[in-house]
Length: 241
Image (cartoon, rainbow, N blue to C red; front, side):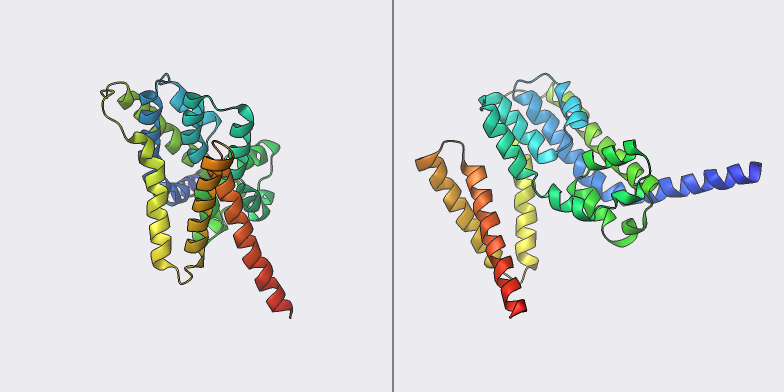
């Protein structure tokens, strides 16, 4: 019996070490970004404790940053809901290949869907992460969630002592996406997507200024979705012919 318990304990430790190693890159992104989010939230005049609570309950980095702007600007609930749907629409496609079948309990499956992020999806869809069992995937998501909460809490605490004259933390998420975009452009052989992105920005700007206020993000994303869908349909027809 002791031998069996020892083997089970060794297996648990092995799983934990594997998952910790896989989440190390996630921590390198979540903690500094979470700190920026916590500082941004406090600098916007919101009580510090909403940062870890938001990280715990919402757990969606881009939307959490946007949610602060939504609260401060007092946008209508309909625009908030629509923007949230558009920004997180990609998660529908993640769910098509996420290995939820490996999770045995209903609680695991519910949390698996709730805690599905770009980073955890990327880990579980390729390399060593694709070999994880259901228990390890849940552990991976819990630890990743913990990194984000920790970063937000640290940032909120720092935000309470930073002078209000210091500005710019709201740009943290934008700067991260800009860096990712520049890196993607540098390594991409197809500049068509860059053209689509510029076109979508122009359409979004026109809608924002001349059609509907606060519609830049929604109209731009819809434009980009239509453009890449057109490419997909064209490629599909060329393959069939």
